[in-house]
Image 1 (tube, rainbow, N blue to C red):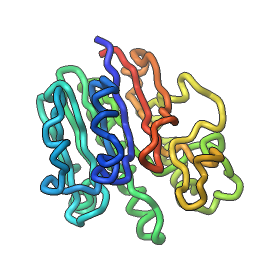
Image 2 (tube, helix red, strand yellow):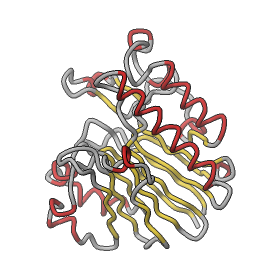
Image 3 (cartoon, helix red, strand yellow):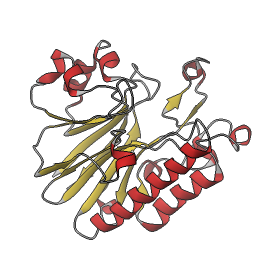
Image 4 (spheres, one colour):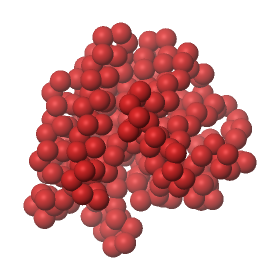
Length: 255
């Protein structure tokens, strides 16, 4: 059966709700819509999103208010929902949620940003390590579809100014090497199956009005395990959708 999945770093679920998010969600018709950086505890969820017709909502929230968080709107109820990785330093930040279905796992991650110093870069790389180990294990059982804001541009083609950003977190050699491992050892970058062109970005800096000039980075990915890759029918960037400093991304797959 053909499924349509979307992923979007909304930069605040309450903020994007005021910009027409519910109407957008309903108009997509997507089977699963994964959100990152929801910045919303369950008790802070806007009334209009508590019961969206046709969708079930699951949230993984951090201990700290107004920070991080992921959520999933899905049409079909999963067999099981897992809200954490089982590692306290990651779980307190609400960066992970996994839905299990009959023949696939759907993972939504808000990967750490490496800003604020070397400690956070090390934290980010530990998260990458934990994530990759999990994907490898799960892919022995079922298809794995994973998405989210990875907070790293993989190749020079994935950002507008690669040379100027070689020493900036999000494009450091150690971060990019981990994405090499993702794609060499377990996963496929679905967007690059269909599009090999430059100037395809998913994030633009608000402060410099970079979106109007398309000076951006591709930080958001749909990735599938090697076995599921043959079932991927489409992947794209919905760059015309506003409301956040990120654009949503899409995946069409037969499952």
